[in-house]
Image 1 (spheres, rainbow, N blue to C red):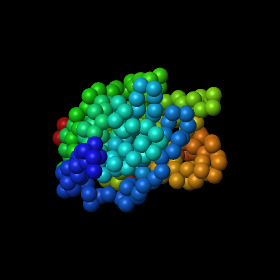
Image 2: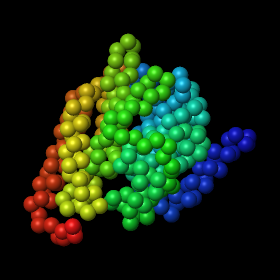
Image 3: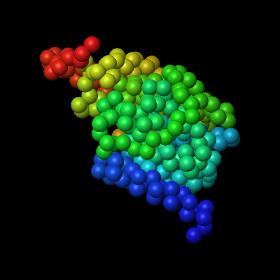
Image 4: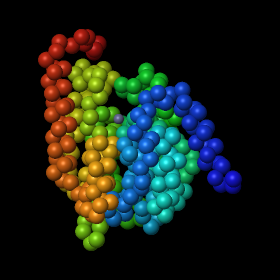
Amino acid sequence: MKLRLIAPLLAVLYFAISASAQYQKQIDPDWLKPFPPFKIAGNLYSVGSAELDSYLVATPEGLILINSNLTESVPAIQKNIEKLGYRFSDVKILLISHAHFDHCAGSALVKKLTGAKYFVMDADVPAVESGGARDFYYASRQDLHYPPAKVDRTLHDNDTVKLGGTVLTAHRTGGHTPGTTTWTLDVIDNGRTLHAVIVGSPSVIPGYKLVHNPTYPQIAEDYKHQFEVLNALPCDLFLGAHGQFFDMEEKYARLKAGDKAAFIDPAGYKAFVADRKSVFENELARQQAAPPKSRPLQ
Ligand SMILES: [Zn+2]
């Protein structure tokens, strides 16, 4: 086997072993289920697994990858990018949906293999650079920690990322993590401009304290802000960090059957946001009605 092939394999092995005492037991089998890469529209491609979504934006000046997923996902992402005819080493910029191991554990390895620059939303930088040890909720959950990765550019709300004529906008849609990022970009497909929205995550994790949260006092305000932002975004192509957000497998089947507009789903986007908003509001009302077990010392 050529050295060119052995080096990445050794790197995967190294990162997989170093991560093995961490999040391994929490992996959902669907997260690693291979999925064929495909063109969503214009220069935007899906290169992730059946459930953990990664996106590739191809430009004349190189590639942008959104979501490194698990360390173990990286070889499959690389293979998917190569199946599309691109070179993994051309990934210049790495972005994420949010600082949880299922979307960013592979970042250290992607950086090592490609030399890509890692751009992360300000409020998620401490978690990413500590491998989850500074996560507001999972700090003590070492079983969910992941290889730390150095951030090369700290993003702020509404910052843009530009490469080869494509512009992505980073919307801080916090709550799920303080720096959860919803990415938007316009793609040109058959002469038509389509607004793509890659939702970071509006989900409320069971156990999240939405009131009197000492490690994330503004969590409820952030969720409220997130829903305002999501409701205001124009959306043609509805995408997200998890395939189940937007029924990826079902839409992919329609795409393969010839429906070129399978991923154009503004109504599905609105319904998804409304559903997650009501889940959040119900949970907030429940927690506000319940007497707090303990009040933080202020
Ligand atoms: Zn998450």
